[in-house]
Length: 267
Image 1 (tube, rainbow, N blue to C red):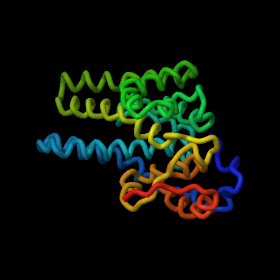
Image 2: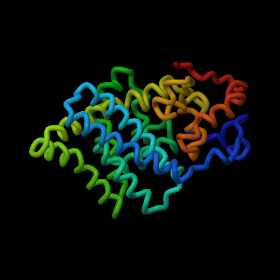
Image 3: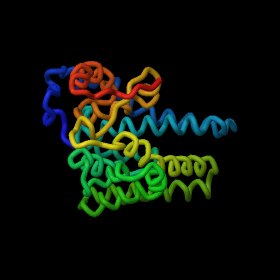
Image 4: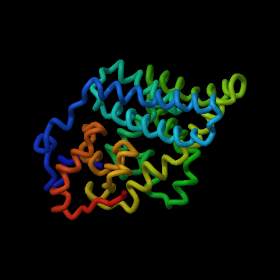
């Protein structure tokens, strides 16, 4: 999927404002600390016996990690090369997933969607039921796609990340049932990725970049998902960090309206 530069009538980012690229140190600290705050809350809820709260906390952890990892993948948080590698590992570890596999397949998604060589985008071609059923194998297939194309140190990262869910389940079974509950929620929770992050945003995609994905507007839902609902804006300007997507959307709306693109409204 091509970015804004290839779309007639859509302005360059320099015309919309390069302030949209700004990320402060405070914003980085917030992005990287939020997932671990969620883990601490989850552990506290387990210790207090507040089982009813754990699914809500797990949802927050997923959103926080996906948002931060997404920005790390697109190098929009101002990290250097070494910090990026460790951030991918440490953020992915929270969800017991491979941050390095996600980087490889997500950047491929941006380069080639829609195509047969886009493993992340494949659920867009499935039915809704197909996307749901695809959930348990989705991350494994992304990891295998990335591993076959990786070499050297990247394969080391991928192998280490592949061991995370097995280690967490084993440690949970042997040491603390709370860890086993957490690991189970993280693994099962990832099964919604094909539906929520690919199928629904790209459902019934068109031929040009403006119709290949959707975007949502609202006061509650976008904030609840830390602005990840601005999917079209992200595909057009992937270098803009998630925390600036709402401002990007406001500046871009007149151009989208002129192009006949109407965002979907939610609460």
